[in-house]
Image (cartoon, rainbow, N blue to C red):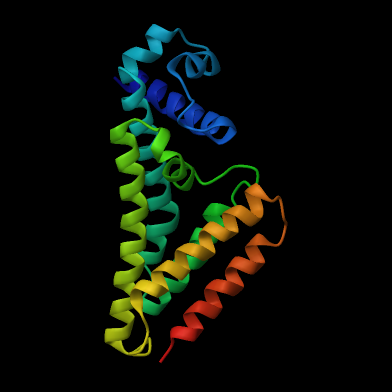
Length: 195
């Protein structure tokens, strides 16, 4: 089975790369088989169909995001430090390859064209993220780090908007200042909420 896992991992990595070029909704078994230099039937044996492929690719992106953005922030001491780390880590994640969109955001924006299970997974990933940011903001209010007048839902909305704006500024518009502007925007947002 180790060979099967490494083949599956290679397929998913190739799928993530191909997704960044043309989207997940249009990534077919045939196209991916060609990119992986495999037969369609060989690739189909690993996934069984388009929906399973889309779900697996989104799950892989979520796991990478968890390891590179979420877990390092969770290891910070204190709620404010966690929120600050999330902004920094997410900016790094979004800009790790300025020519390649965030696969989770990309899948969420493509949700109407994805298979139902994949679309719901992409939406859940985004909702889970913004819900967590909102919970952290509420905790910061409760602990006294954020002002009692801070609107946690609005904070989460603005946090999300900064990340999506960073992605647009960098990947869509091809501008170089996205990282600096995103980091400054996260800092300003957090500072504006402080008690």
